[in-house]
Amino acid sequence: MMDWFARRGFDVWTCDHEAYGRSTLTQSNSDVASGVADLESVSELIRRETGLHRMYIYGLSSGALRAAAFASAHPERVDRLALDGFVWTGEGSPTLAKRKEGVEYFRTHNRRPIDQTFIESIFLRDHPGTSDPDVIRACAVAQLAYADSVPTGSYLDMTCHLPLVDPANIPVPTLVARGEYDGIASMSDLLAFFDRLPRGDKQFSVVPALAHLTSLGLERRKMWKVIRDFLEN
Image 1 (cartoon, helix red, strand yellow):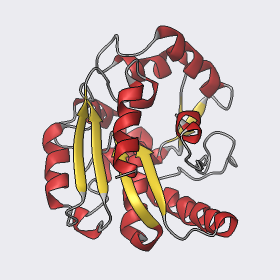
Image 2 (tube, one colour; image 1 turned 45 degrees about the horizontal axis):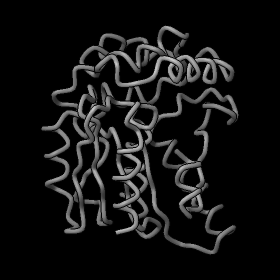
Image 3 (cartoon, helix red, strand yellow; image 1 turned 180 degrees about the vertical axis):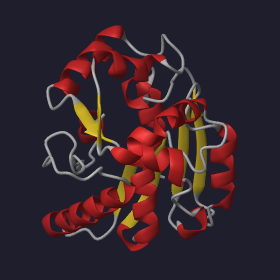
């Protein structure tokens, strides 16, 4: 996805949040609030390097929660905001209903174990057949090369602390998008959030034949085009 946007003229930046990927492995559970702090630091770095004070922000899943919370806290740094697979209250989400069974573990542990079966389940739980099996396997290999566990903060936030963002506090142009079969981002939840966004410049999109991991689905370029069209509007 990053390469696709870069080839189309975007200056693309990303980061591994605390205790994820190549970032420092700490004792933090890397919740959404700490993700906002990460984005504050990253946005300052981008400003120093590019001279730009406002930027496009895109987030998927818990990344969308972090992006929305950052836009709420620092709207002056956000030009346009794209939320993909976002969740507001969690109402109507079968994935989060199932995830709540692990709340006690998330409360008492800052990391949770992952393996190939778990990573594959992310692609298969909503609607099997929306992702290439080779991509699923490659994603599992890439993820497990970093660690066999990940922080619990976003899971705890999504199961116990929603809503984390008040849409009334997001005054920037906003895209709310979901894959057709997304098991986290329910239509009713997203439409209620969308309706409360104060800016008239906003867009709601449902992209067919995609599940929660839109950026790795077979029809991922359809979502990328929706995002690009919104950002260049």
